[in-house]
Length: 205
Image 1 (cartoon, one colour):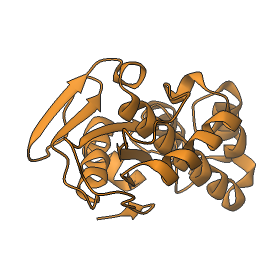
Image 2: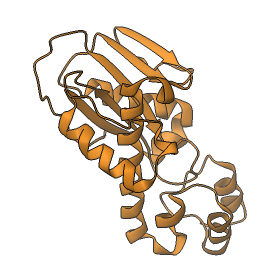
Image 3: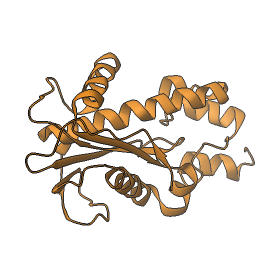
Image 4: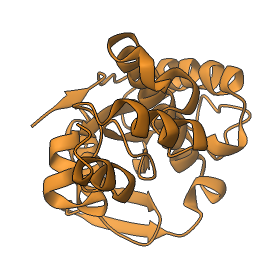
């Protein structure tokens, strides 16, 4: 089991602990899929929480710092490329979500998950479509997951600079697909995804 990030408890639990959960990185063809779990502190509201995809990188970074400092508890986890290829991306995403929730120091009374699928977690779990736009705790989780995954893709860019991970973060952009065809697949490409699979079938990687 692989974890990323840390958990912090900033205040005693005084009311129902609602945990928001979201993932980042289902669509890319390279890199891990990340998930975050966040229990916000109602006494320390964070202004500007929203779906991470709607925020600029600078604003995401600022909000991520606020979340880590003000939330009652938070945890970031991921599933590896190998787990994605073995399980499929949906199951790997749910695995990362479960790891994030299980890594919390506080036990949530309810877990709110963005999307249609619920990870296998004990207790009350609700899946909410567009939850990252509707519930602040899920928005906070989406921001932590996104910023953590982007940081990981920058780290992978330092190892594999020819693929441009710093620009597209592993998504199948035209540039990425072109570079994949030019250089072949590397060890952090998801072999079960069609563009990578076709590259491998062509003997590239």
